[in-house]
Length: 165
Image 1 (cartoon, one colour):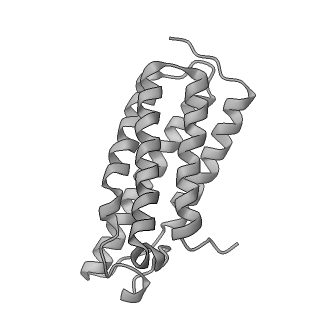
Image 2: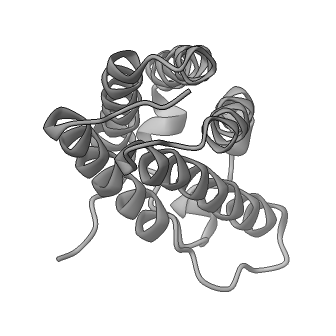
């Protein structure tokens, strides 16, 4: 199915690119120690790289005049699957207090209900994104890419230490 995207889709893609860049840079933890906390932080970093890559691929396809529906569907499925695992990426003791370099704020652990709600919001958004990519609905895709990027940003705003610029 050929789907045409306009200026609104380009704006959605730009928002997604900002979120992706933030995810890729924000989760750079460097070499991890061999401790359980270090291993958890390294795994979290690797998982967020996959999240960023899948969302980037979706945005790259959305920018095309005729996106590859199979690529959209595969990356939306991967993104949704990763989002479903995300709550387990932050075991207690894997924050900065352990000596591990991380951008996760202590609020991840001190406000577990708030963090779980943010993760659930992302999971809902990625589930809807997966459904929309399967439908081929260009306007729906644009809107859901924005909603998914907003869910990423909402969590980053509260639970991630901002990048130093």
